[in-house]
Amino acid sequence: MDARQQSVEQFLYRKAELCDLQDWDEYLALFDEASEFHVPQWDSEHEYTTDPKRGMSLIYYTNRSGLEDRVFRLRTGKSAASTPLPRTMHQISNVKIAACDDATPGEIEVKANWTTFYARQGVAEHFFGRATYRLRPEGDSWKIRRKHVLLLNDKINAVLDFYHL
Image (cartoon, rainbow, N blue to C red; front, top):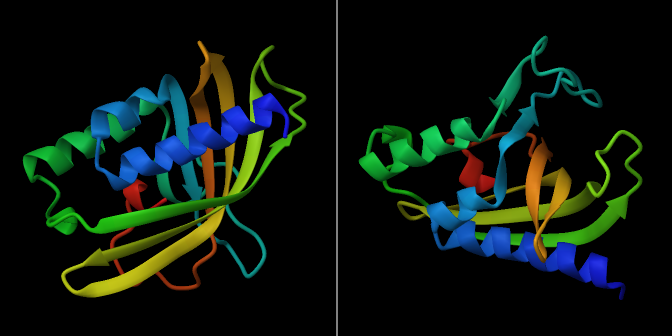
């Protein structure tokens, strides 16, 4: 396995672990301050919103401050829908480094499949989908410049938040 592939996989595994541990400071530190976080809404059976400024999204943060606000609400109990927080277990698979024509030098695009199992108040559920990341090198690791999550669940039976994805 090539060193860059292994480095990217370890980075994504670490991100999942930090989210599962609810280590929000370390989790947020993985995101560039200007990072975009987008979870589009499905418009039809096979098409989803591609422009978050013109169509509906399940989640859209233009930069890291959106995630920081969510973490603040979780920590202060100001998110009734997330109290108590669920226990989560993220699984990452099929990590592929993709061609990235419009990237800043050094940036890469990474595609991965994911599943998140979660339990809250005696109910266990799961979310699953595909994610595309834009990563930039940061020392011997990476920073997330963009996270685009395609949620594949047909129904959402619970609150959907960043820690589910």
